Length: 413
Image (cartoon, rainbow, N blue to C red; front, top):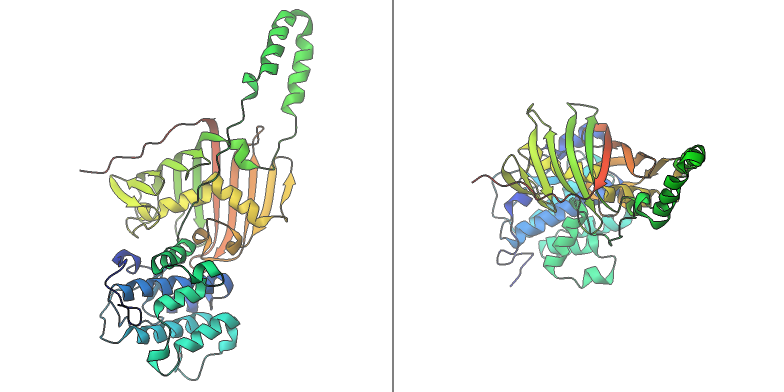
C-alpha cells in the first residue's frame, strides 16, 4: 500500500541523498538564480531523491536552500540532519519552495512572494500544485517525477522503478552502448597496397623517385572527418587530460584508454585531484572502477576520495563516445577545416552525457584536432559552470594502436 508516496522501502539508497558540496543558498548567492536546463535538472534530481526517501519510509526532510547541497558537477543532495514526523506532503511543499528559491533567489515568506513568472509555465503549474493549502491534494514525490518526465505516453505508463531510473539517467553520468562498426583495414594490409609494394620492389631501381612522389601525395590526401567513431574503430590510445577551473588547482590524469563502440570506454590511469598530491591509480571498465584498491560504481560514485568521484568525469570528457555526442549536438553549426572540427553545443542536446554537463551555463565550445589518419589528437572544451565558474578541459591523444583489453584493477582484500 502506498500513501502520499510511502511504500515498503523500495529502492532506498542513502548514498543517493547524502552528499557534500556547497549549499544551494550559497551557490545562488554566488552565481545567481538557476535558469533553463540547469533549473529543470535541479528540480528533477531533487524530486527523484525525495521520492526514493519517501518510498523508503523517510519523510520530514526539512528541505530548504540551506540543506540542499550542490556537488562539484551540479548534482543535488540533501544534507544529513534531524528529521521530523511530518507527512511527505509537507516535504513536497518545501521542495516547491526550494525550486522557487533556485529560480528567483528569494525564499517564500521572506519579505513578500517571489516572482513566479520567472518559471516556465509547465514548472509553474507543478509548483502551484505542490503549494496548495490542503496537504491531501498535493502530488506525491513520485507524481512529481512522473510529471517532470511525463511529456510522453511511455513515461506516464512506466512503473515507479522505471521512472526513478529514467530520472537518474538524466541527472547522472551515463554512457550508452553504440552499434559496433568494424575497424577499417590499415592501408598497409590492403591487397592493392601489397600488390603495389611487390611491383615497387621489382622496379625500385628505376622508379624510386616516382614511388616517393606517390607516397607524398597519399599523405596529403584529405582526412574524412564525417564520422569520428568509424575512423577510430576499435583501438587503444595513450592520453593526458587536464581540467583547469577558474578557482582551485587543476585536475590531471594520464594513462591509456581502450575504445570499443559496443561498450563504455575503459581506462587505466593515474588521476590527481583534490588536496591529495599523490596520484591515485585508477582502472575503469564499464561502470566498475577500482582506485588504489578501493572498488566503486562510476555511475554512482562517492564524493570521497576525490579520484573515485572524478574518474567518470575523465571518461566523459575524453571518450570518443563523448566526442561524437558533442559533434552531433552541435550540428549543423559545426565547422570542419582540414583536420580540425570546431563547434558549440548546448548541454541539453548532448545525448548520453547530460549529467557531465549538468552544471554548465551556456554553450560548451569545443575544438577537435585530428592526425593524418583522422584519429583524435587533441580535444579542448570550454564551458562556464554554476559551481566553480569557467573551466577548460584539454585532452591529448597519442599512439593510437590495436585494441588492448583493460581488465580492471583488483580490489584490496
